[in-house]
Image (cartoon, rainbow, N blue to C red; front, side):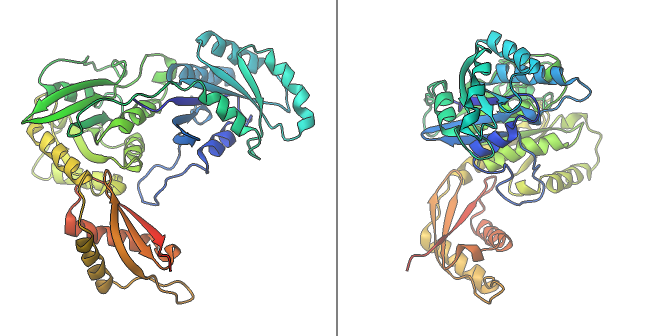
Length: 438
């Protein structure tokens, strides 16, 4: 079952993003400094005690040329539609405003649980101003200071009481769960139908016609699969038609449950920034990935077209240099037979474990060919040994004299050498440096 979703709603300059960053635990940015990953983030995963959840900063969602109050209504609409619990942030220094009251009424009518966070309450003497916000009548009121982190523990404790209980999906461990992610109207539902060989989900040219993630188990050549059609938007409306950012949350939920993620691109439209953003979430989640170029039948081509298009993909998705690319048409089913064998291959790589002594032989050879770096004082990185500590994705720990000496470029070099030796097709490989204890 997907993680619960917490949405942060409020008018501008009340400190939504500050609270968002505090809850996430850092200023939100890409974990890896690889080229090609879109850096702005309004969604993230977060943890509080034993709870894991998604969090949305609706303040990062802008609908251009709209009055402020309309923007807030759209943000509230998104939160109501997508979230399990809503954190309504208000400014304690400015007091209750008419805009707060209007959005509060919208949230109250939603019947979703709402907790009011009265921000910028740095001084305890200001707490008397809390009583104004109880008049909203929509939930518990908590004084917080996003900039100083005050009161956020109590706030999160209360928010967590509204998280739905998570239940694990019951599928055999050999079953491959795969999701299809991508912008609306790239042909995800059509591709699901083509894979299944029958019409099991709605297909339409109108983005957003699929209402929710749909699990469909099937078997092919004695391999069990579950295909998760992430769909587009849950409903149509101005807030959803104005921007495609809303498809990201649905993709996040599906990625969380997947072994293999199919990043679907529309061959007619080519690659746009939103494709990179959605693919970036799958990469950061450590899932096995296949890039699927759909609607290939609609492209005028010669003997160079496919190679040129793949080069564009490699340039646009540099952080997915390990992901295989398949060109197909869900409509005509041409080249569709290549897809599931690739899914099997990347799933196997995702769960592959290599023997420690073989891994260390590769590391020793790599260091011999290209010695480890030194810092400005001449201190050299020493790698004592390496071991694979987990799969899905393959994660390798290097025990070293000083983890700070493992520069990003040298880590990439080691990853490339490991991939040369063991392939690891379609899966990220995580390399972690730890200090070897004396």
